[in-house]
Structures are given as C-alpha cells and as structure tokens.
Image (cartoon, helix red, strand yellow):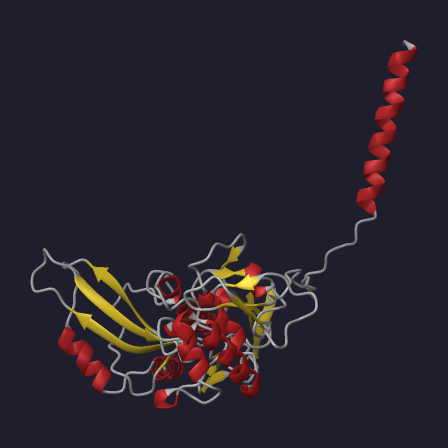
Length: 352
C-alpha cells in the first residue's frame, strides 16, 4: 500500500467521523410541541399616495422599518391604527394625492372613511385567515387530519392539534362515525388544502392553533353542540351577511376554490387590492341554463367590510348537470344555513 493511498484513507475516515459527530449533535425533533420561527420580515415605513410616486410615512413606523407599501396594500396597515392616528395619516395621504383627493383611489378612500365603526348592514371586520387562501403560492400544503385515540377525537392541521373532543362513548363504531362527521365538516369549511407556511407565521393576524378562523373565539369553545357530540365551528375564510340573498351552493362547487373566493380577483382589480378583513359574501345567484348545450352559472358578489370595495366571481357548470333556480330560491327563502344543516345531520346520525 503506497503512502499516498494511506493518506487518502486517513483523510476519508476523518471526514466521515466529523460528519457523524455533527449529525449526532443535532437536537431531536418533537412533534408534541412545535416552536415555529418568527418571521424576519421588516415592517414597511409608509404608503404610496394615489396617482403619484410620492409616499407618506406611518406616524407610528418602526425604527427598523424598510420599504414603502403599494397603495393597494395600505388598508391592511390602516386597520391596525387607532382612530386618531388613522385620521392624521389619512389627512396627509389626501393632501399629497393627485388633485388632493382620494376619489381616484377608492381602496384608500374607503379605508380612511370607515373609521373603526361597522360598515353598512352591521358587518364587522374579522381578521383574514391567509392560511386558507389558495390563490397565493405556498411551498407546504397539507390536508387537515382527524383521528381517534381511545375516546378522544382530535383535529390536527399542519402538525398542530387545533381541536380535541372527548366522547362520552367507548363504542368504536359510533366513535368512527363521530370522527367521520367531524372530518367532513372541517373539510367542508376549511377545504382540503391549508398553507402551512402562513399557518406557522407568528406575525399573522391571529394564532390558528388556538383560533383557526380568527373570529376571536378559542377553538375549544367555538363549537356546534348537538346530541351527537361537539363539533368545531370553523368558519370559512369569509363571512356571510345576515339575511343576504345567497342561493345555496350547487353540488360540485368548492367554496374554497381560488377562482371562486374573492382574494385573487381583488388583487387583480384596479382600486381594490388586498382586504384587511375577511371578505363578505353579500349575494349568491344561481342561474340555470335553458338547454344542455349551455352552462349553468353561480355568481357571487363579495364586499370588503373596511373599504366597501366589491368584486364578483363566477363559477360555470355543465348544462347536462341537474340544476333548478326555483329550488335554489326556495331553499334560500326557507332560511338555509350551513350550521343548521350540520346540526340536523349530526342529530339524525345519533338517533339513527
């Protein structure tokens, strides 16, 4: 064996030993408690005004701020300000905007005039749930999971347990039925794709591990209680205006589909942009085609509570699928509510 070959072997063994030591020193991962890193993004310093390449700094800007927000993204920051701060900031925005007016920039006009009061119809601004918004790119997408261990049914999303329910029965058949009902309800409300990147973002508007739908209620108390058990009342990523003329969704319509929800349409619409609140569904109209060669349509009207901007989205269905506008209107007039539907289904499964 030559000296050169011996040196090669010694070097190779030493390298393998160093790599092995480094791997052994890595901390073990625990799935019982997840510590998500905080975002390293710096807050913006201000907003661009309407129609001009001029900006106004936030009165309460952070010392480590960086960059200026686009006009469409400004309402999100305005919603975080106190009424007095927002008034002063909006006065500067108006003075420096094109023609000293916000009339050409409805998104800022609505945000500045809304103050902190509810919008027309008594609607409030609920924080959005960006982890359910499928219209933006996401590198880690997961499906909610529901499982049974002994008599405890739990729902986990992105590796975190967001809901637990201890059943009063030990019957495995009934436990499986409860688990299936909870799983179906969660997928109906949340969808089968949750963005874990945004779920784990500690700078988000709320912590989804304890308040998944950002409605201010803890997941464990935000429930539907029926004779068949207790079920998580996770709202969708938008709200519905009470008493609004909304036709029931037809079979096959995914209410969380990015081409049905309003977020992407709002971003791509002039003068609309991001909504700092959950969007409101204020109207839903089912129109059936008159012959099978045409398509059925479901048109949804959405409103941003803080800016009052409105957008429309439309879903199309094959003319050969069953459709009845009359039955849709009848169901709406009878006060069709998703919560009532699920409560009835749960109670029926118990009595059956």
